[in-house]
View (cartoon, rainbow, N blue to C red):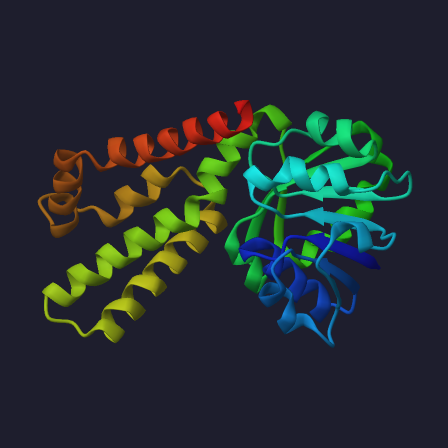
Length: 255
């Protein structure tokens, strides 16, 4: 498939690397030559959007503040689907510039190993071609279709979520080191615990509280830790973190 990507920063470069690996013909645009130099010989590269040839699917992966300027330079096409990763930019806003079928996605960085989750919403004009987009994105991870008005929530929970998970993991590893474990041992214990717990929860399809009670014995070590978490207000901290991120995503959408 012939695919174009405008913007090869963090997310754009991950998408580019995966699609090149899958054998697609890539056409990459970035205004900074150092961003696309590493793709020379593996993909077609351009510094200007106007030089981008006709493609089947075009990804818009620029920063929110650069999006409108980029959209003004994209030529209209009736045979192309535009897939946007831009936070805060609605399908209607994009369509007003390019006039084609638009798909909006919110991926997170684990797509780089095929373990990501991608929130996805379709413009009515793109519905007949949605399978083409889904097939292209499937190797990236799990697709979750959501109504577009919920995209700020998706941004907060899964788009930004890996950063919050990394902070939690870092804190647990530091705690392990304070208790005398080496960094390597602590990291291994934490990662395997996080991964195994998530997979068990997914496998059992139960409420997290049910599995938490299995681990928690009367007057035991786990209930002591749970009591400490509740005293420190961990639930409230995490919920406020997501809500504050959600409010910022709303602000970007309203700018």
